[in-house]
Length: 315
Image 1 (cartoon, rainbow, N blue to C red):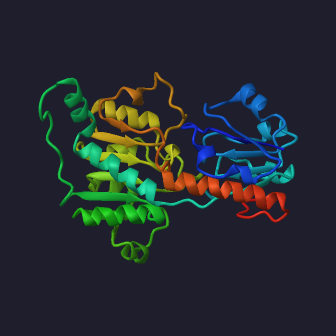
Image 2: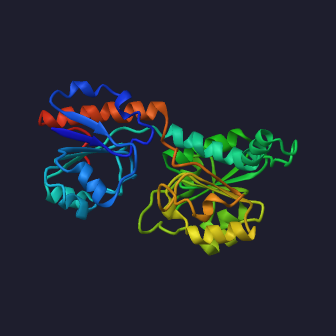
Image 3: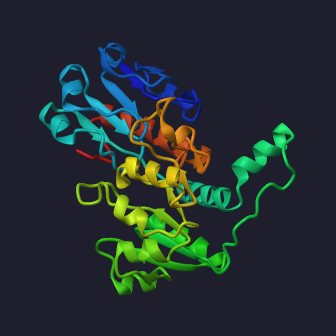
């Protein structure tokens, strides 16, 4: 039996779990991102595919070309890039793993702090022998943090904001005053109100048809010229073209981004060259603890499925 681990960018999947317990299973990992015919060729004949989050979509068209596929394991318990209906129709079991919300919270704050203290350009200037102290940082104490989405991650981001002495506003399509109070934040009356009142806006919503493109030109126009937008959630929440326009025109002070419409991001994409962008290559959930959890439970998922008692089922 063949099992293929996709998008193992750092080539560490085989070292974070003991795959040898899966007797009779030939496990291999692919470090580069594949698509099209090359992806089909690599997966041909595999009974098990392990995917990292939403790096490679498992579409109906792809699944139809993989007649021997019987099990998909995804890191985390939600993966919008897997066609679950097509998996059900084809008798493909889909299982997930646990995932900690702590790493994306931490990366969110790394981006916020990097933006307001100009860590990117200051570090580059230090390394290149440029001006000593070329910028003036922005105080977080007394500033306003706008948190869009108060789930597990958003609530913890808000908690850290309060620890910095920030006033925290919250908004989501279904947020109530009671839920906001539980999270220790004040509910904004609308998304535009939150954008207009915040010095830093950070996004933590699930991407759906109702939230896709939620932050567009009008919402960005409501932001203060000195405000910054951070997105470690899903790229589809933001109209990327409108964001690029706002950054180019200096209508907002900067953006901290960990998620993108196309990943890896094309080398000629404007987000790669805009000086007010602080970006990371989708590292929000990438930590030793999460990787150990993902791959250990992936091994458990495969073993349980082979025993006829699959666990952590998504379909």
